[in-house]
Image (cartoon, rainbow, N blue to C red; front, side):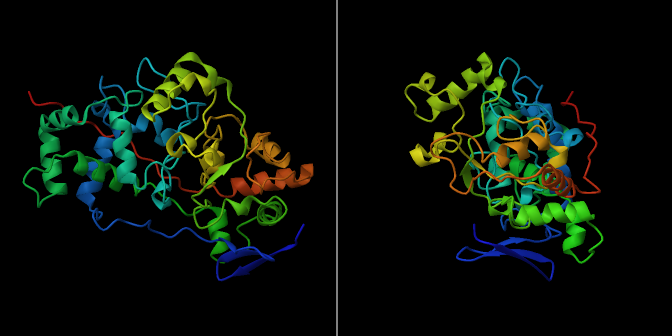
Length: 362
């Protein structure tokens, strides 16, 4: 195995391996990128906050964005599979939206390129929020407070209550759900006492022997790419309602015989490229200690289970990522790696109280 050299320069940790590209860890910028067509304003953010928590954006008025991405659960959901529209069951785990504003792709399969696009998809999904866009607009128009809030958020438009403006507002709110004050951030910014001796050993393993940095790199600790790791099925995936949902998604994607596929194959459902079978987007590791269970299907309950999985070299699938090899970590090294992962937790994770939602017009 080629030796790797870890260099710390001006707040950047670079692992250099002969013949390989440089992989970097660096502090998260104070502000995420903001699209030119959706500038941030306090009025838009406030409107987005109300819409994010409003269950009237679902068919039966039971499900909001916060149902699956709750501030109580570090903006994810601490259960194996994501909540679903009543009478349904999801087949994937809810990822956190905390710091998702820094991602270049959204969802486990990367089907959305922006927070705006991400916010739009669950509303109309029959197993998530199950609301026709036109009906949503009519509901919003029938609420005086929303009429006023949309006018303030989009003052240059004659008819501001539109689907595009609603998701722009939600995305603007989500871009405020960020934090970058973890011990690791402080360490990168020059406070060499921010990490304990054990956490520093974990960092050394992360960038070296354990190889985590191969996929979990950059400021948000994700390469925003897709990898096949061979994660085992969780028992929840085989529940009847979860399987029904997966079959529905497959039929919508043009697969003629969904029952022939017995598990979630991730990006393959979009691309239909055999090379993508079982590939999922690399999730951020920031605040990972706050967002169990882990993986696209919630297969692992603890970070210890995740480490054991990678220590064995991942799962047993024929098309597994070639970077995955048995790590032969000692018990001391496993504990140090977990300590480092916990040092990625922000000291001040943003929390937002659910606002008092306005009533329909009398």
